[in-house]
Each structure stands twice: as structure tokens, then as C-alpha cells.
Image 1 (cartoon, one colour):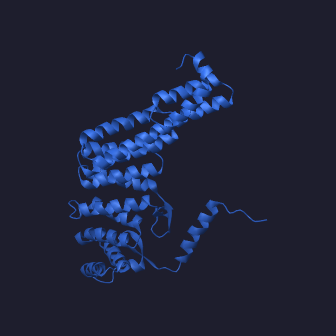
Image 2 (cartoon, rainbow, N blue to C red):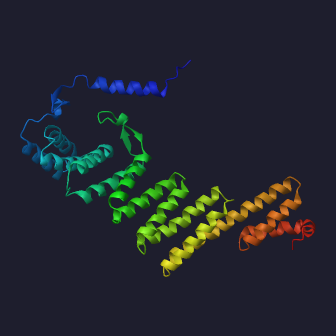
Length: 327
């Protein structure tokens, strides 16, 4: 009989294995902390910094990480160490460790009173958030020595919100809102996705981002109504969205047509819901209830294909319709 290994036991084994693999590593005490001897400075600050810059120019990312770690760990209060935090973030990003890249960019913003790489940091942060959205992983227990293990869509949302609050009127905020809306849509949080797109329209009116948000609201509403086909508010929202789209972008024929197509598809979904309910009552031998649902499908969604099917059933149930005084 096979023994079951619990997730916690496996996790503990993984942590212990990682720790044991580092038993032979040498450590020293410096600046109030215990550090790996590999991170100890062997040269003056400027020389380690220059080596990091040279490695960065040559795209030797692991070496750049090594040199900038030495600078930030051994000379934390130096001006060059603050700049090194930014370059360490860049280097980690290019080694595909977006978790450590983000942490160093955040620290750079926290310790630098007037960061010259301010906008660049947030461009990297947007790319990092997109990577987390796509499945990039964070380090186990938030420890850089432990492996990258957990996906974190929550971290993506947190970074998007950071960008939006830090650069509220910048195009990066619009991109962050759009990516955040897409992530909410992927997770079937349709209301949150629509709210994000509405925020783009409000903050960045008459822009290309606003135009695309109108279209995406229509698309998200269509997806949502397939889950909640009995909720008439979704269709009403899509219709208001189309009206505003036509007011703000009257010449955007392609986008208007897409939004109209979404509404037409939504009408089919709602009509189908009514028709299938009518079918259900037919199977339950309650023809009068069926007639009411078929009639509603015909009157509320007359242009749909489903309305034609409902009319066909109404003819079969004509005597019951007459009893209910339905023409």
C-alpha cells in the first residue's frame, strides 16, 4: 500500500533539503547581519559598482546580480548603493526572477528621495505584474534563498494598483488598469473587469485606451450574461455602454459594430434562457407556463433566431395561448 505524503510534509522536506544544500556555505557577520561570504566585498565600493555596470552593459545578468548584491549588502548607506538597487532590479528581471526584481525596485523607491529612474521602475513593474498574471512565481516563504514556487495573481493586482496610485494620469496607469481588467476577466470576476474599463474611460476619455475599453466592456458583458442569463441589468449596462461609445467615438464604425454584435449575441442568450425554461415546463406538462415564457422571448427579443423557435412552439400550444388571451 502506497503511503500518502501530505503537501505540508513535502513542503517541509523541500525547505530542509534547500537548507541542507547550503550547510557548507560560509557566512560572516557584517552591518548587523549574517551574510553569505560570496556577498562580501573584496574590492572598494566604486570598483564593485563599475564591475556591475560593465556586466549589465554586456548583458551578463548573473554577474551583474552578484556585483550589485555586494554593493547593496556591504555599503547600504552609500549613494551608489541606492542606485545599485535599481540596477539589481534590472538584473534580476533579466534573469527571470521577477519576484526579487520587484522587491529591489520597491526598495529603491523607498530609500531614494528623488529617484531618477522613477518612470523606468514603473515600466518594469508593469512588465513584472504582467509576468505574475501569466504565471510567474514568488519565492517560497518570501525567502530569496528558497525556490520560486507559488503563482501569485494577487501580487499582479497589488502591483497594478501601485502603478495606478503612483502615476494616476500617466499612460502606464491606463495600461495597468487594462491589464488588471484582463486579469479579472480571466478569473471570471466580470464586474471588477467592467469597473476597471469604466475607470479607464473616466480617467482617459477620448483616447485609444478608452475606445478599446468600450469594446471590452461589451465583450465582458456578453461573457457575464452567459453565466447570469436571468440578470437583465447586464444587458442594460451593455446598451448604455453602446450608447456612450457612439457618442464619444461616432466614427469608430468597427468598434461600434463589435459592440452591437455583442448585444445581438446577448439577446440570443437571454431569449434562449426563456425558451429553454418554456421547454422545461412543457416537459413538466405545464403548457400554460410554457406559453408565458415563449411569449416573453418573442416580445422582448423579436429579432433573435430563438424567437422563431418560440413562435413555432406557440402555434403548437395555440389553444393554451388563447386561454391566456395571448395573441
